[in-house]
Amino acid sequence: MWSFRAWRRRRLLERAALPQAQWQELVASLGLLRGLSAEELRDLQQLVLLFLVEKSVVGVQGLVLSDAMRLRIAVQACLPVLALGLDWYRDVRSVLVYPGGFVARHEYQDEDGVVHVERAALSGEAWEQGPVILSWEDVEAEAPAGVNLVIHEFAHKLDMLNGAANGLPPLHAGMSVQQWAVDFAAAYAGLATEAELGGAMALDAYAAQDPAECFAVLSEAFFAAPDLLQGSYPEVYGQLRLFYRQDPLLRLGG
Picture 1: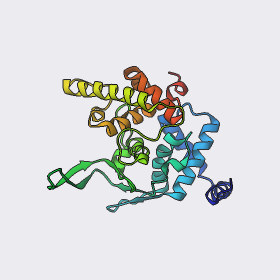
Picture 2: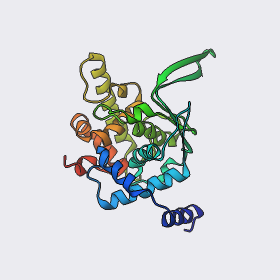
Picture 3: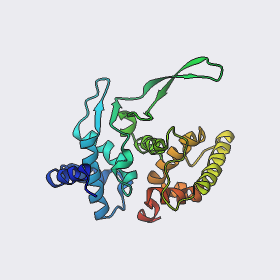
Picture 4: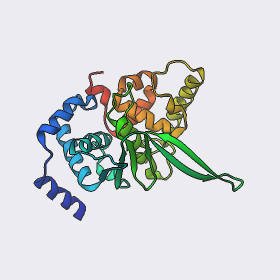
């Protein structure tokens, strides 16, 4: 079926291109992209180009973003939807980038009607029907194994396609919601137990915060350290392989 959006995207891809030297340098520098085939890299490049045209990626608090900085954010954001398509980010219209960590202010009303105000220092945030917010300092920094701020926040946006983030994004036909819930609940319980014990953890302890954070943390591990996720929670790795329609462990030779 003809659609104006598809036609417009085809025309854009016919007429525009990313700077190839800059693209090749970025691909070589990001371990996340290792093992992608030439065809997958071509598809990813097209997604990134469309992302940068259709989404506003802007610096705030005086941060001036270069084209290379925007490209670095876009390629990490697009990797999770490489096999899904850019329409999975239809609720993302803008990405706001702070120079470093920022303080977020949130209000909520409890069951007694009392309004509470909380402030928290954050490196990233995703708003339902709103922007993704990132700290450039954290995007650029060398992160611990399995940690990727951009993928984390964009995983929240995928989760929010069903409404408020709860760890259950829209699953594909043939995927079992019940089995997804069983596998993620087991991982969440295991992570919570590990966090309570206080020892070293293979995966980010923030996954034990709540089911939404569990999905986001395990999604970033799926792409950034698939061997750690497979070794710790193979059932969740299998669920994410079905959801993202990718197998990072296989392409990385694991």
